[in-house]
Length: 310
Image 1: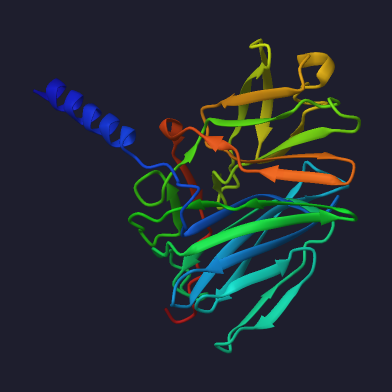
Image 2: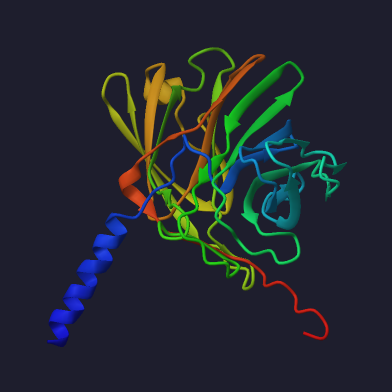
């Protein structure tokens, strides 16, 4: 009887995971991920729109490194208050200090000379800091330098059944999951003079209390226009950028055709954005994601301090 119960439990668990939801890139969410914030080589402006008729607080984290040492990441949290229907706009290289129409002030330090990722989620207020269901957030990022600009959409996660416990469970139960398999396509490096591309990958699977974030491998299967496959195998930790000319080795003299398509294979959730540039032209795209390869991720946040007398 115990064996039957165990098998039944495993079947129910497998079924629940199979039916768990992966985030929808074309819908508003309650949590937004910006996989690339670059204020070293460019300047990054983010916009977050509140599509609701109600005001809301957001809590966010910037996980960034300096140009001097790309192996050391600083983690800075901040709060944003959005009035109803507000499109919040912030040049992340500069400090933000503004009072909204409701008379509530948002203050955030600037992150000039930093690069990495950023994510934000809806909370009840900046004192209680409890997660809430609020699927009314949309976002995008604009990266620009002299004579060159590109834009991508923030990756949304929809709230399903939030438990306000300072743990962001992106497991298909509380929030929708991210995928472990994405596909991107572009022009091979050097197929036009000066042309290159970069895949930026972020991970928000992190334990802030114990300072734990998993390190894992990302495998790439790529196909050129002649239907010839090439594979790549790369290490990943927290945030990384893989260029087509170097780390991905997808130059014209390596793949032999101007176009190439790649799919990642990993056991962990990833949040990517792919961009290419040539001369003064640049363009960014969100990658296709495989909805059947959703992988749970969790963000364990620091607890709210206990006030004196409580």
